[in-house]
Amino acid sequence: MSVLPQPDLVAATQSQHLLHSIIQSIHAASGKISFAEFMQRALYTPQLGYYSSSLRKFGKSGDFVTAPEISPLFSQCLARQCQQVLSQLERGVILEFGAGSGIMAAELLKELQLLDSLPREYWILELSADLQQQQHETLQQHVPNFINQIHWLAELPQQAFDGIILANEVLDAMPVERFRVANGEIQQCYVTALEGQLNYQFAPNSSELFNAVHILQLEFPDGYESEINLALASWIKSLAEILNKGLILLIDYGFPQHEYYHEQRQQGTLMCHYRHQSHPDPLILLGLQDITAHVNFTAVAQAAVAANLDVAGYTNQANFLLATGLLDKLSTCSPDDPHFFRLSQQAKMLTLPSEMGELFKVMALTANFDQSLLGFVRDERGRL
Ligand SMILES: C[S@@+](CC[C@H](N)C(=O)[O-])C[C@H]1O[C@@H](n2cnc3c(N)ncnc32)[C@H](O)[C@@H]1O
Image (cartoon, rainbow, N blue to C red; front, side):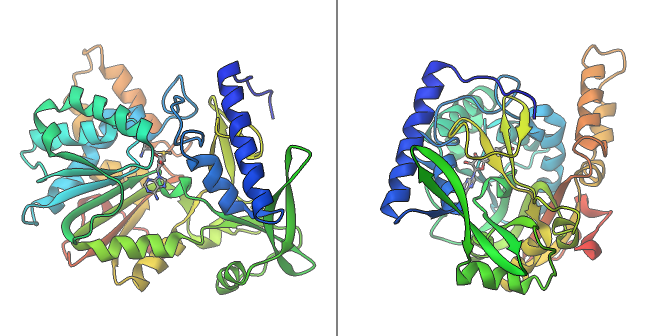
C-alpha cells in the first residue's frame, strides 16, 4: 500500500470524535460489535460518519468517482431505459436511492425532458442531510423547472406506486458482515477496542451468519475470508412491497456468486477509498474514507425471486450502455467539436473492460412488467 495522504486538522479531529463514539458503543456492547455494525457506524453515524458528514466525497477533490460523475452519457443512456418503462405506466414516478451529488438525477431528468418522458415526480431517499443539500443545489441549477416535482424522503413511501427505483453504487455501501474459515469452522469478525485502538476479533459466529453462509453450500479452504450482506434480502423485500408495477435497476460492481466466492478470492472484496487511493484497512481514517464491498448478484436475484419480483435482466455496464444508445449519443457530437475528444474518453471509461465496463453490472428486477427491456439485449442471467 502506498502512503496515504494525511488528513488536515479539522478532518483528523472529526475522525477522533467518531473513534470515541465507536469505542463507547463497543464498551456498551460488552466489548465487541459485529463488523456490519462497525461499518454502519463508520459510514452513517449522524454528522461524523463518512456519508453523513459534510466532507467532499465525489469527484476529483473527493475520494472516488462514480459513473454519473464521469460522464453525462451514463445518465442519458439510463434515461432511455427509463423512458421505455415510463411509457408503459400511468403517471409513473422515479425513486432514487443514495443520489450522491445529484448529478445522475439532473442529467437523467434533462434527458427525459428532451424525450418528452418526464416522470410524474422524482423522489430521492438520501440518508445524509449534507448530500440532500448538495443534491438540491445541483438539481436547482440543472432542472429548475422540475424542482417542485422533486421530493426528498426520509424513508420508503407508505403507499405502493408504479414507477422505477434506481440505485447506482448503493448496494456496495451497505454494511456487510465479514467471516473467516478456521479449522473448517466459520468465524465471525467483530471489532473490539483496546487502549483507544480498534482491532479485529474472530469468534464463533452468530446463528444468522452461520445460516446465511451455510445456505451458500460452498466449501471454503482454511484461512479464507469474505463478506456477506445479511440485510440484502430484507432491503429487496421492502422494495418489492412498495413497487406495484415497474422496474428496479441496480447498478454496482460485483459478480455472480461462483466468482464472488471464488477460491482464489481469499481476502474477500472489502475495500476502502481515500483521496483516490484504495486500500484494505477499514479501521483507520474513520469517517474520512469510504468502505465498500462488492455485490453478490446471485444473492440479489435470489432475494428478488423470494420477494416475488422477476429478474428481468442482468448484464455488464458496457453492454447496458451500448444497448441504450451510447454510440448514438456520442455520434450527435461532431468529431470537430472541442467536446468530442472528452466525451469519447468518458465513453471509454464507462465501457472498456479494463475500466468500468465489465466489473460493473446492471440488474433489472420487475413487478408486473412483461416487456423485454431495452438495455438487456446481451443478457447474462445464465451466469448467475
Ligand atoms: C457510493 S455512493 C453513490 C452515490 C451516487 N448514487 C452515485 O452514483 O454517485 C453510495 C450512496 O448510497 C447511499 N446509501 C447506502 N445505503 C442506503 C440506504 N439503505 N438507503 C438510501 N441510501 C443509501 C449512501 O448514503 C450514499 O449516498
